[in-house]
Amino acid sequence: MDIGNPIDFTGRAVIVTGGTKGIGAVIAETFLAAGAEVMVCGRNEPPTPPGAGGRTAHFRSVDVRDPAAAAGLVDAAVERFGRLDVLVNNAGGSPDADAATVSPRFVEKVVALNLLAPFYVAQAANRIMQGQRDGGSVVNIGSVSAHTPQPGTAAYTAAKAGLLGLTRALALEWAPKVRVNHITTGPIRTESAAPVYGEDGGAAVAGVIPMGRMAVPDDVARACLYLAGGLAPYVNGADLAVHGGGEVPARFLVAKAGRHRGAHPNLSRPLDDIDSTSLSSL
Image 1 (cartoon, rainbow, N blue to C red):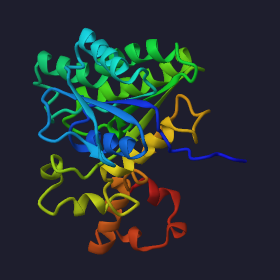
Image 2: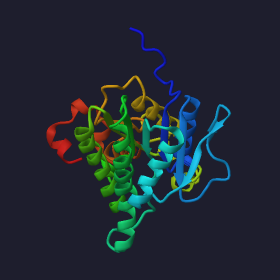
Image 3: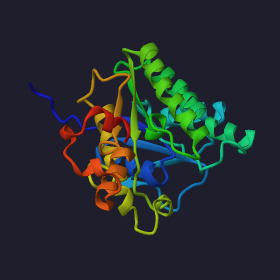
C-alpha cells in the first residue's frame, strides 16, 4: 500500500486560532514545516509571527468570541489562500476562580472563549469546506479538565466538556466532507504556564504522569498533523488523549506514601493478602 507522504500539507491552507504564542504558535510552525499556508489570529499582533522553513504565518487580529469576526477570519483566509483545509481551534484558557464567588461576567467570558468561539469559527469554516472536493478537517484543542475537573476551574471545566460534546455533534452532522476531532491535553510545559507548576519547574507534576514528563507543545502539534492529515481519513468524532497516560490516581499516591510512613499496616502487605474487609477500610 502506497500512502505517499501523509504529513505533506503543500498547497493546503490552515487556520490556527490563538496561534501567536505558546501551543498555538508551535502548531502553526509545525503546519508551516509540513508545507501548509497558515493564518493565525489573536487579540494582539506578535513581535515575530510563527515561522518555519523560511516562511511565516499570516496574522489577523480577531476576537473569535464575536461571530462576525470569526466569520471574517475564515473569509480572510480563503481570500488569501483560495481555500481552507484545516481549522485548529486552539484559543482558550482561564485563570482559576472560586465557583462560589465568581462573577457572571467571568463565567460568560470563559464559556465564550472556550466553547462558543470554537463553534463560531467552525461554522464559518464548514461553509467553505463543504464546497471543496476534498472537504476539510477541524481539530478542537480540549483539556483533561473535561474529564477530570480540578478545583477552581468550574466554568472552564464546563466549557471544555461542552467542547468535547460539540466535537462529537459536529462530527455527526458534517461528515463525510468535514471531519471534526478533539484532542484532550494534560499539563503542558510552556513559558506562560511555568508559574502554575511550582518552583521546581513542574518536576512534581511530572512525577504523577505515567510518561514521567509533562507534555511540550510539539506533542500536541504532531497530534494535529495526524488528525488533519492523510493517516486519519476515517477518524471522525474522536477524542485523542495527549496527556501521557493521565495522572496516577491520588489514592495510589497516598497509599504509597503511607507505606513509606508505616501509616497503615495493610499497605505493606501484597494486595492479594488483603481481604475485602481490609480493602473497604482503605
